[in-house]
Image (cartoon, rainbow, N blue to C red):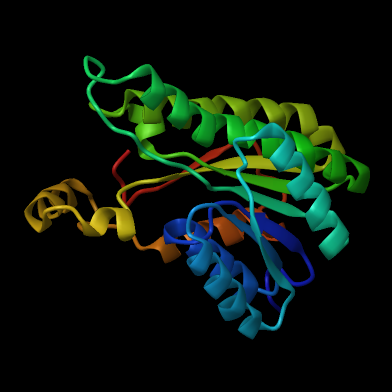
Length: 247
């Protein structure tokens, strides 16, 4: 029995990295998968074809979740195409790092809009469907940086900490309708974003992680499968660090 058999999931920002792996693992676990991409059109289209091999219904949508009306029409489109929506993984995010002294207002606004406002937009639209169904799961992607901060990432840390407060609040609001909401806080994960880093720097970071290695995107995806499935039926409002013991 596959853990997500017959469930319909939305994964935002799935053209690469963690989002892509979550979409892959969800499809492999029997979920019908809707996913969004924005700038990486070719990657989005390639992923749609690749995931269809799992034998479940898969569809990619080009959508900017940071725009309120686009998020609303996205959810409407998914319900029209798939019939329902059971699981939402809010994963889309960006970084625009810089020390506070040099950070522009634009860098602050962009990161807050994509990382935090998009979660409000998508959650608000999707919760209407879930409230009617009297069931549903939200998994919101934060970061160890949202828990402990990081120099040069005040905007990113604020957005990722905001996700935690938001998720804990909606867990309390929606719990009586059998809707669960949890946070995954990845640590240092190997993705396209980290491939450009100096290997010596990466080695230094890995030395400080109790498990002595960077995480794989699969480590995050597996945690999401657990939180999306009925195995975690009595877990809501929690932050699950997947970080090799960093926190």
